[in-house]
Length: 452
Image 1 (cartoon, helix red, strand yellow):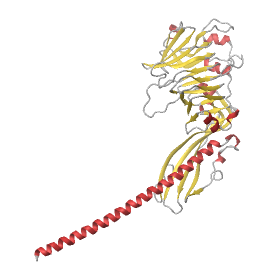
Image 2 (cartoon, rainbow, N blue to C red; image 1 turned 120 degrees about the vertical axis):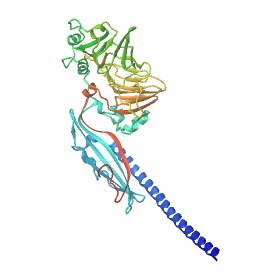
Image 3 (cartoon, one colour; image 1 turned 180 degrees about the vertical axis):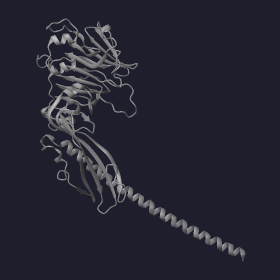
Image 4 (cartoon, rainbow, N blue to C red; image 1 turned 90 degrees about the horizontal axis):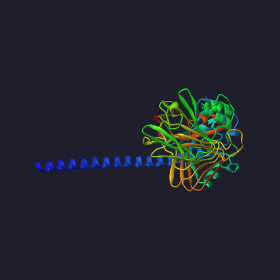
């Protein structure tokens, strides 16, 4: 009888364990089903959210800020972007405006759009915030990501696509009828540090430490100097070749014309310059302000060696005539994921510095394969690209684009004094579109880092 009782007890325990296991399995299946349903629901809400953000960006790209009433923020409203409902999912926009910031000749405001999607009566919500900057006033060329003034470019998206030009999603291209206010003579005075607004040879000769005269300087390469600094390197006449290299912690620049090569080496922001020309002893140990001026064009702007620029280099190339880039122009090793910011301003005026009229102001890329050019491009004429594929890290301003290969514009803002001097007067524009975050939210849960 004792054995029978033990057997019955064991059977009872086994049955209880089985029931508990079955109950546990049932609970697990219900939890798994709920989680699966939540994932499906979240995926549906996310797709609706992404569609809402995409439509918002498309509306910004098609907007005409110059037609908006002052101050321009009324565009961002429930009237322009009403709530919507598709496939049982409701979405809405909530706008918030950061304070206006006054800057040199213009002002900017950041507009934030919080887009929410959820099913009516549902507890789960998806939220994403997109930001864009609105700028108004006399806007510096440095702030412009992509501008084509060709009248045929009224529809920027179609114009760029038809010419094989792509751009970063943050860019909102400008087109047709807009142009930069550029006075080549004033730019020359600013680049050389002359104490006048319009150039004359007497002041230029003084800057070059040449004998006083009002006669033009002979063709050659000159240094504009002040106490302890070389403000600019000036080439009178075309340069055949302008080469950049970064090696041994020093920025190097080579100037070639008429079979002669002159070399400069320096550390950005520090004294210690060396120059292979006749004035080498006079400028040894000076600082270099990073400006190169060419009264003419450059047949080949190129990189020598593994890198064109030091990380801290900021160089400005101002030419009255055509610039031809024949290689990539890249910085020395970047940290993983670090953005490629423009290190060089390529500025071709398309007009003579001394009022001599129009000249060829194109910027051309003439190389095969894929290359990266860490530059901001401002062409008084057109931007030309051959059969190659070029990725331009900075902004592009040009009268026209002719491209047989592929051009991509990243549009990162440059930090160039001459780029700040060039202005688009009385402009209102959008720039810097970005999605800050996308997150899930639940009733009774945290409402996100945006404060909404």
